[in-house]
Length: 83
Image (cartoon, rainbow, N blue to C red; front, side, top):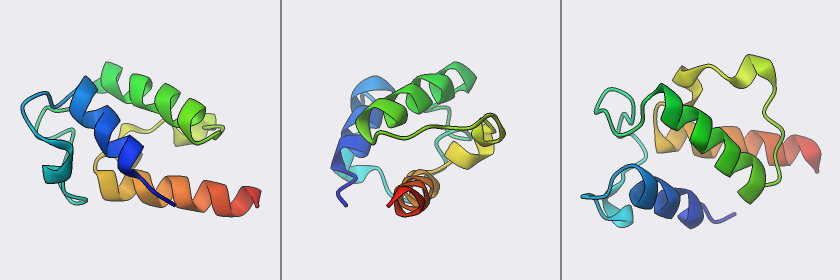
Protein backbone atom coordinates (compact mmCIF):
# COMPACT_ATOMS: atom_id res chain seq x y z
CA UNK A 1 0.00 0.00 0.00
CA UNK A 2 1.28 3.43 -0.91
CA UNK A 3 1.20 6.16 1.69
CA UNK A 4 2.33 8.91 -0.68
CA UNK A 5 -1.10 10.57 -0.55
CA UNK A 6 -0.76 10.79 3.25
CA UNK A 7 2.62 12.51 3.00
CA UNK A 8 1.34 14.82 0.26
CA UNK A 9 -1.72 15.75 2.32
CA UNK A 10 0.37 16.57 5.38
CA UNK A 11 2.83 18.60 3.30
CA UNK A 12 0.09 20.54 1.49
CA UNK A 13 -2.18 21.12 4.48
CA UNK A 14 0.19 21.53 7.42
CA UNK A 15 3.88 21.63 6.47
CA UNK A 16 3.91 24.10 3.62
CA UNK A 17 7.65 24.70 3.98
CA UNK A 18 8.62 20.99 4.06
CA UNK A 19 8.52 18.89 0.87
CA UNK A 20 6.54 15.64 1.22
CA UNK A 21 9.64 13.53 0.59
CA UNK A 22 11.36 15.14 3.61
CA UNK A 23 8.60 14.15 6.02
CA UNK A 24 10.26 11.22 7.73
CA UNK A 25 8.28 8.44 9.43
CA UNK A 26 9.62 9.37 12.88
CA UNK A 27 9.09 13.16 12.66
CA UNK A 28 6.88 14.17 15.61
CA UNK A 29 4.11 16.14 13.89
CA UNK A 30 2.57 17.38 17.13
CA UNK A 31 5.71 18.32 19.05
CA UNK A 32 7.06 20.25 16.06
CA UNK A 33 3.76 22.11 15.72
CA UNK A 34 3.11 20.83 12.21
CA UNK A 35 -0.24 19.37 13.33
CA UNK A 36 -2.31 20.76 16.21
CA UNK A 37 -5.47 19.35 17.82
CA UNK A 38 -7.73 20.76 15.11
CA UNK A 39 -5.30 19.44 12.51
CA UNK A 40 -5.63 15.94 13.98
CA UNK A 41 -9.37 16.09 13.29
CA UNK A 42 -8.72 17.26 9.73
CA UNK A 43 -6.19 14.45 9.32
CA UNK A 44 -8.70 11.88 10.61
CA UNK A 45 -11.31 13.09 8.13
CA UNK A 46 -8.74 12.73 5.34
CA UNK A 47 -7.80 9.19 6.43
CA UNK A 48 -11.42 8.10 6.55
CA UNK A 49 -12.04 9.40 3.03
CA UNK A 50 -8.75 8.51 1.37
CA UNK A 51 -8.28 5.05 2.85
CA UNK A 52 -11.96 4.16 3.38
CA UNK A 53 -11.46 3.76 7.14
CA UNK A 54 -13.73 4.22 10.10
CA UNK A 55 -11.95 5.81 13.04
CA UNK A 56 -13.57 4.75 16.30
CA UNK A 57 -13.96 7.04 19.34
CA UNK A 58 -11.10 5.28 21.14
CA UNK A 59 -8.86 6.07 18.14
CA UNK A 60 -9.35 9.83 18.47
CA UNK A 61 -6.32 10.17 20.76
CA UNK A 62 -3.90 12.67 19.20
CA UNK A 63 -0.96 10.48 20.28
CA UNK A 64 -1.99 7.92 17.64
CA UNK A 65 -1.30 10.56 14.97
CA UNK A 66 1.99 11.85 16.38
CA UNK A 67 4.14 10.67 13.46
CA UNK A 68 3.71 9.53 9.88
CA UNK A 69 5.04 6.12 10.89
CA UNK A 70 2.33 5.74 13.54
CA UNK A 71 -0.36 6.88 11.12
CA UNK A 72 0.87 4.42 8.47
CA UNK A 73 0.75 1.60 11.07
CA UNK A 74 -2.80 2.56 12.01
CA UNK A 75 -3.88 2.54 8.35
CA UNK A 76 -2.18 -0.80 7.72
CA UNK A 77 -3.73 -2.43 10.78
CA UNK A 78 -7.21 -1.15 9.97
CA UNK A 79 -7.06 -2.16 6.32
CA UNK A 80 -5.67 -5.61 7.25
CA UNK A 81 -8.48 -6.09 9.77
CA UNK A 82 -11.07 -5.13 7.13
CA UNK A 83 -9.69 -7.59 4.55
